[in-house]
Image (cartoon, rainbow, N blue to C red):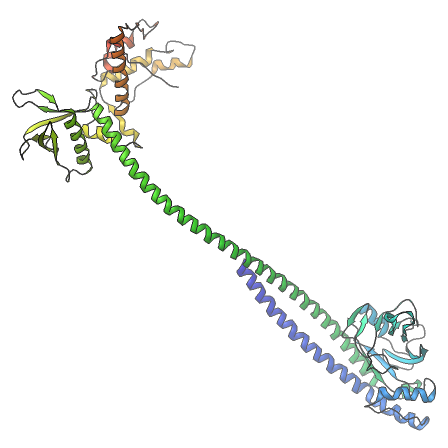
Length: 523
């Protein structure tokens, strides 16, 4: 957005420069045409009428350098308007409506050029000038009004009647101006100064204006029309320039706002970035500390759980097939050493333990131990898992070490025993509502087994076994006789009762607490 605004500003600045150049050229052309109109349109006329005035009235005429200063002298000596009275040419008004009234675009019967004002009478001690035009045209006057109604009314006015309510242009004048003549510039049209409105004053224009050389009036009118068009074009260009300057200022304001907002956002971003970096650093430290604590907790929990559920045994070297348990202190030491071996097999293959004050060396790769430097006696791990489980001791320990394992599917072991497949299929087809023809469950009579999996989850198994052993101890201590449980209810085929041994995983069911295998289904 900032780049777009910068490009627009550059384009508008170039446009503004072009408009300013055009404006300057128009001003030069306007001044040139005005000067040419004055020189060519009235130089010859002024000289001719000056000579005529000298021959007819004998009144001294103002020179080219002192026109305005000598006019009042002529008026004072002659007591009013004469053929030496000044003529006023009004041109360049940028207001199209007012221009038609005060400039005019017509020729009077005596061929006076457009916009010529002649001395008519006096008002408040100053001459009144009336525009020359067709008899049926609207009268237009330039007159003076003093401060009798207030200082804001003092000055020269354009209007359809002297002292009337309707006026079109006003000029308060300047102390350096000739008091007998209206100012030539800085006229206000409807309250606004019109820089292009000008008044040119010449001498000796009277009823004998027709004696001016032929062709000069038409040329002056043509030049005046050109000046008017140039003034209008200049006003239009000026309006365009002001519009462009307004747009430029607006765009520059937007750029400043965007830059301020950008700086604010950059400051916020830098602050946020610093906070993020600090938080990431703290998070990293917290993660490292959390990992360290989790590892320590995992090792502690694993070692404790394994010590409760797993036993290390050694073989009697005298009696083949006889195995004996290590003392508890040696059992814990073996567990710690074996866990280190599982993490780094090469580094921790050999370990030294102390059993009852006797130093032993262990080789976990060969599962041998001995008192000498060369281990020669066999040892093993008893995990207490059901006999039919295929979970190895190494996998058993990995389950304990991985407290947050997401590989839950690794606990699922596919069972390929077709006898078990057949028993599960029989149970599904015969139990529950399978025999009820009026329920959706009747479809189970066509159920087909695709696969059977056994869940070999060490933690769940040890938790279950610990609870079962506690029940057995309570039952033996309190001499509680368990109630008989009929798993098949009204099913005369007794499929659940008959198939218990197929699902015990090689772990004989505890009859003293009436342990049963149950069918758990979900829909």
